[in-house]
Length: 105
Image (tube, rainbow, N blue to C red; front, side, top):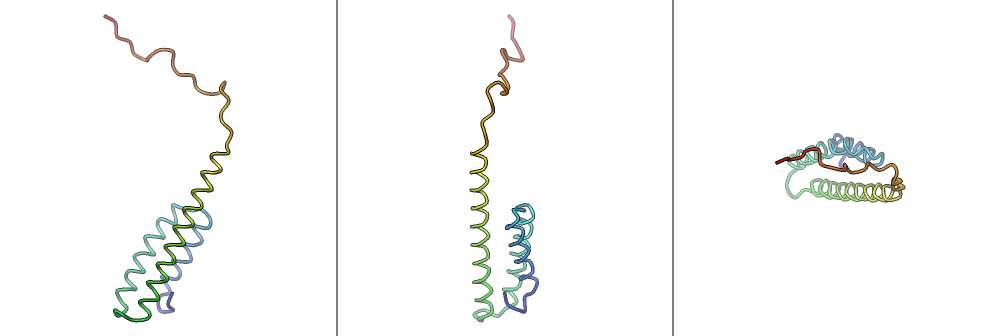
């Protein structure tokens, strides 16, 4: 981030740490905050300026990294879930032998 945008840099760092820890609820909040701060910073910079282009490039890289982290974490969680042992048949809940209601004529 540009030195003139410390709030964006700080939020980006907090977002990275949240994703690295797997704190996805916090990351969702920080992502919205990061997006808003980045958008506001881009609006303040003059169109066509090198700072604006750099900030936009860094924001794109940050979002791409965040997406990769989220997908990797999701894949790892799916792998752990698939490795869990299946419940023993004796411990499964048996379906009811009849419906909880009956119609009589």
